[in-house]
Image (tube, rainbow, N blue to C red; front, side):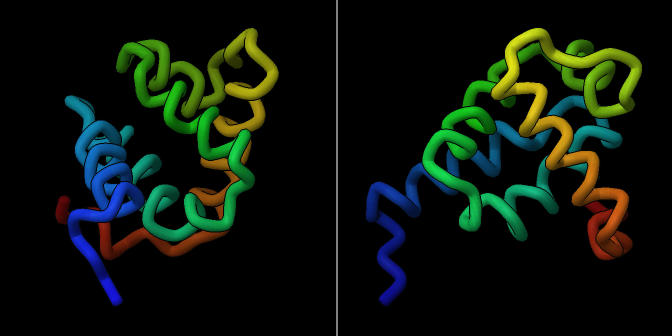
Length: 97
């Protein structure tokens, strides 16, 4: 049963809206990862994703474009997972976000 008021559903909606950024490039990386991989992550990885999307767009852009990496190991790992997902997945359906 899909309960839209469950804590998990509320968290998912919040994460979705926080994953929609002011930059289209970030949307194309974060939203498909959230929709396809988030549920498979460990609890620590899910928490790292939640911390990641609290960062500023310019930091996220630099990290996700592999110009630099976050200093915190858990954030670096989740960034690597997002980049790997984007490189190995057809995300053409998201190009119209």
